[in-house]
Image (cartoon, rainbow, N blue to C red; front, side):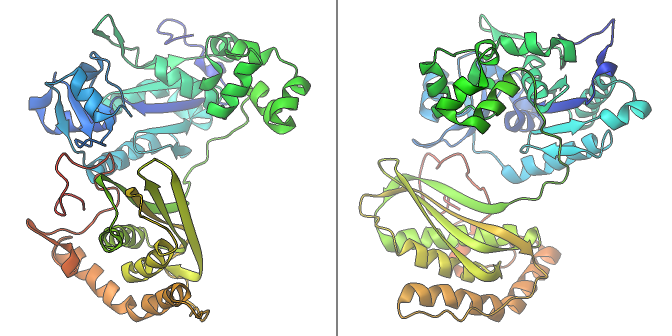
Amino acid sequence: MADLPHEDRSGELHPAILLVDMDSFFASVEVRDDPTLRGKAVLVGGDGGRGVVASCTYEARKFGIHSAMPMVTAKRLCPDAIVLPGKISRYAEVSRELKEILLDHSPLVEPLGLDEAFVDVTGATSLLGSPLTIARSIERRIHDDLRLNCGIGVGPSKLVAKLASRDAKPTINAGKIKPGPGVFVVLQDEVREYLNQFPVRALYGVGPATAKTLGRLGIEHVKELAEMAPDVLAIHVGHHHAATLIGLARGEDPRVVVADVASKSIGHEETYATDIVVREELEGRLRRLSLSVANALRSADRRGRTISIKVKYSDFSMVSRAHTMVSGIDDPEAILAVGTALLGTLEIDQGVRLLGVSTSNLEDSSTPVQLQLDVGSNSTEDLKAQAAWLQLERATLDDAVDEIRARFGHNILGAASMLERTGLVIPEQRSQPFGPPAVDSDSEES
């Protein structure tokens, strides 16, 4: 189990699946784009009181900092750390370049996010060499073309490849950065021994609730789960879940790499530095969220039939509301109309710390729009019906705006609500995704 420099048996793998996981992706892109940051503790995330660390360099990890840590905790551990707000659009651009490299090695590429992807190279070995050879080729291309580093796990299944990718990466030992092998291979006859060392939480499908159930049964590690009788576990988690979990613990993972998985939803949410208790202010935030989602939909040539809003209150409780239209919409005013109607059904007196808007049931933008004539007797139904009319009435205007922005620049034209002290700022999907900035203002909450 490891990178095999002298004896490459990876050709025995069938299937042969890679998991390519970029090292500290967001932070590494920032360092690459600004070489003065090299060797420093860099944190990417929200700098406000409710911000979180999205990514950090290994120099920051030496202080015990990790992703998803509250930013206030991270800055307490390393006061000299450099905090950057992050640029999702830039990371998405580099992610597309990464995918092109992976597609040069196999057509079966399944992204898991911006910074990692499964690659099935089973059918590419006759042309490109063993799975280890292909993995090393990908590693070199990422280093040479993107000037970034990655860890690649190689195994006979998604589960094993995912876990192996962690062993391919650098680690922190006694405050020092220990380089990883870059590629870590687990052969078929090594799978059971390899999996036995992990806690059950490492398995796909074992969340906090399932882990707690297994813990009550005295099962903490994969080895213990693999030895359990399925009928006994089924009493506690159900027959299907029991069979799946024990199968995974024994190295049986039937999931295949699925290429070109289309997005099932497009949305945007924001966390606010202070709770919002004024409905008019929240509706103003909703307008900007609707603009960002509409821009993302139109960029992807998609429309959404189901509009959802999500609200997290000051006590961290969360509620959501959704409405499905007769046909899809991508106009910001139409999305706003539905979102406003849904928001109107919720109480906000206790304070809102997070607001989100998303669209699902996506369809191609060329799909004909049908009028929705379910105008009800109350304002909520009126607003929902109004959205369909807005989609039709504003279609020509939206197309013209898209054409002007494509020709003269993204921030050349927009509504008055997009005007900030620094000029016209078009809200983008996933802007400030890691929490609010240190100072909350309209110019910063875009």
